[in-house]
Length: 80
Image (cartoon, rainbow, N blue to C red; front, top):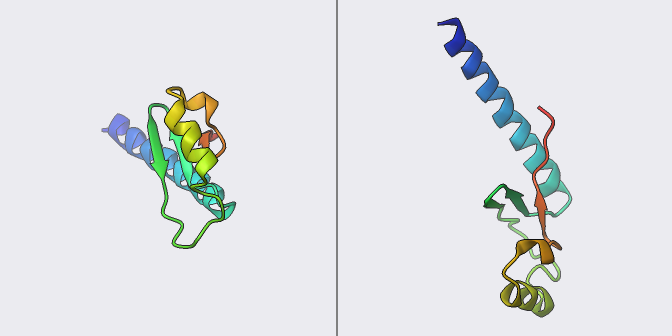
């Protein structure tokens, strides 16, 4: 029973840390975040200049590796 409570507590703190990181990135107009093999996209509900510029779209279209196109995608790094 104690292990289950500890596990629930850990899950809560990890989720809280992830949400804090996403909130901080959102505050700086960074709407795409890579978390391992998953990309988290947050709708900004406002127009962002050059978010889908032709150059950026072409860079993603021409490259198969995300590492070459990191202008709007950043790896999620949270201290837990």
